[in-house]
Length: 127
Image 1: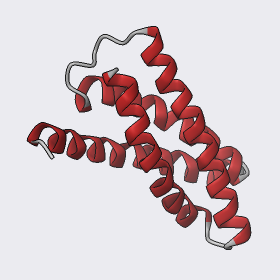
Image 2: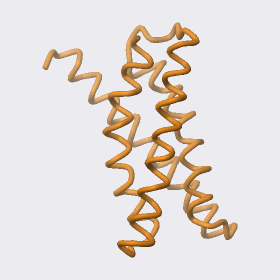
Image 3: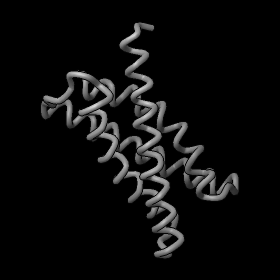
């Protein structure tokens, strides 16, 4: 792996960690303090974290990606919609079938979605 690709991956993981904090904080707040069902909270929190993640990917993770074409934005949004679907299916599966607490389920879902996101978003912002 080239040094720049390795550094890009490190930056991606760092931004992903920040995005996970945003995601879990919103998920927890909506579910515990506002009584929103965990699947609705998960959808809202995921969407908010995707917006946050997109911004950081463009300005920090993928160097030289500041000028986005409509096609790149569409790919990024499309990959995020798929990520949201994966997140929701994983959340439901881990909570309803495996009987994990929703926050533990969120961590498990994050592993699955992160693999998808890295490759899809890298393609979206780098072209």
